[in-house]
Image (cartoon, rainbow, N blue to C red; front, top):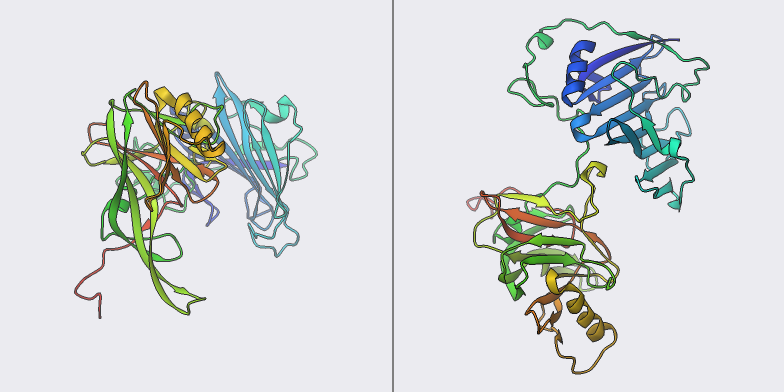
Length: 437
């Protein structure tokens, strides 16, 4: 079997077409530079590609998408380059089993298997849509592969396509075009004045991105959570936190034997804690009328008065950005729908007081108090020896909550925010001249 191998700057999964085809020589240059490119494997016998390999070594990434005769993706393998000079971890894989030729690509009812692997040997195999999870029994060779040199990659999906013999790989011809001639030289990635790829093209996977976090504390801003429109109202000050040790902890206080999930260096001091709030209306079925309510959406520790110009997701000591799949979050976990801000230098003592006061209910405990002021703050503990404090707040439920760091133009941390729901979407500002029309 003869298989043509073509190279391009990007792949459009909606059109199932390569964007900006290029020669093997240009692809080799991008490979050496770590820049993104794709490799497309085709045969003359079918319109859909056999396989598309997606590469971006600067992101430690190589992926493989396998297609069937109908042009549906059947395998999505995410590999990560972790070891020098080059071992690839099969980090994340999804396999779809389409039950009929007419079954739509990615049909939610389609049986699929998701395998999630980590370099320390942990892993999970999930069967959807049933939701059954097990620990995959895989050998080291099944978890890892040696990174082939450029031009020496095999067709990884040969067995999937039923090839009994290794296919013969030949270079595809690169058609000259006006578009190719106008390509912007030296453009990194997909962006350039005239060289930007369509928005539908594949990009290397990235962790969760910050949204309009600062806007949640600006009254009058309109946002949506995907279900209803909301208007930001004045933020509420709910207390202050003393961090004399100069290291802020943001974590779930319910895991008393663990170190805090996130720590952030801050100048020693006392900082205000604010609660972001939104107002919205909805139809209440048991009252059978429209009801307007206000709820909290986030908490913010103000480290400085300087506005945040950029936001980033805080990482824990065990978080490896090279392993993040698309949209993945890092943060603190909680089994008790509770998070906290605390002085990390007094963490063990502050959490011990939290446990003694809340869980064991010790009466008249010095260094612990329940807070009942209508805010999200539920408990406060303080360490008499250091002056450090802990403020525990209610979250929207159990799970993992990302911690967002706002930085000034100079790069200093000026705010630390925890959102209680997903990242909201900013809505256009209301035109007051036509709002009531």
